Length: 313
Image (cartoon, one colour):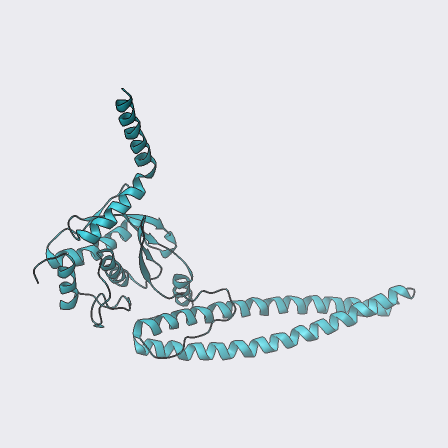
């Protein structure tokens, strides 16, 4: 009887553990399966975090994701991924809005179009240099005006304090001080407008720097990165990443200029989800720089996939 009770108790414990930790257990199982039995069955995926500030609907995003997975499946005529609309997929695909996409949108707002070409990079670099020079000149003028305003404000307050301590101001002095007070208020409003414009200019310059640094990475240009003004901006420029650990697998998408580029970035990250590493050929989808430019699988990509899935080469 004790033996039966122990068996029942052990089964109950196992069931409780599975109930509370089934997601983690499933992730571990799929990670082991993907490592030792690659391509044996499709990887299930679902949409995780989704930020609608990208201006793309969830349904449209899912269609683009499907385009990315199909690139690999058609290459070997095999189902490698399955979408789970109920959120139960092992692989989560996240659309995360941060400074990378925000920078792209800011440039669109001021009429600057970005293309992944050296010519576009050179044009943006010229704009960046001009805008930065204008900004520092305006900032210098702004600081000078601030100092002059502060000196006038100090002189006004000193005179008011002196008159108050010595019996008050005459009508002539009172009128003059009132005139100076109104002038200071007008000057203060103008200073605030200049501050707002400078902040706007800083945002645009920083957006240009972010995009230029992304182009440096995408185009593999041997130059120093562009500096941003202030410390509020990050320095990460990857458009997408794949990450995996013992309990989770995720594709994070941070930036895209258009639907075509989004599909190409997703294709690259799906390759990592399959267990593929980077390739040396710049034409390959799995080239180490995930620049969202390469549209079709190369022979190198297909051979890497077949080797990974243990198919005949």
